[in-house]
Image (cartoon, rainbow, N blue to C red; front, side, top):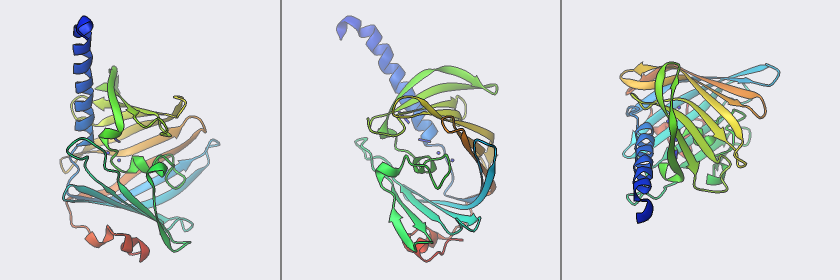
Length: 262
């Protein structure tokens, strides 16, 4: 899981503010660019918990690969039967040299309809298939979509972190700002908060079981809680493999249509 973020009379204040902003941008970029290997594969165990404590379990097969400067991800639901076969493919592109955004390309296949549909940019903040994670959370959010600021410093479970704010440049964005606690040593996100259009706290993210796997910092358990609906989703990554051969044909729209991804 990589989440993406944000004259002469007062020259001293302007200089301090500019330096502060540059530091925020640098932290955001380092967190955004954490190495993830050329390929990865694994199983994601998903637990949905409603306000009454009732749980539903799902299992997703996950594959990623780097194709030049493009990051490709494909997810396919394995269980239970009512969602089995639903597949999601996304291509995340780097920003242009001038810093402008290049939107990711995303598609979802719904086996009940035997149809692939494109996930538009306006839908990226929608919840992914009943979970509390959005489509945007599953990819690599472009840094150019946000303005970044450092709100302070704080320990999370004994780990020194920066408190980094990413405020959406798009005033119509469903998630107006994201606040993440970024590990000062590793640049791994330790927890997060997500705010809605009215700047009300909507969701919180907790990250657990953070360790190096084959030399790559990996968050193996994430819990996203919607504090407004009292619903939560737990993602746990299992059997994770880095830099092992994956089937490159999986990362195509036609593979979704043929239900080829296993």
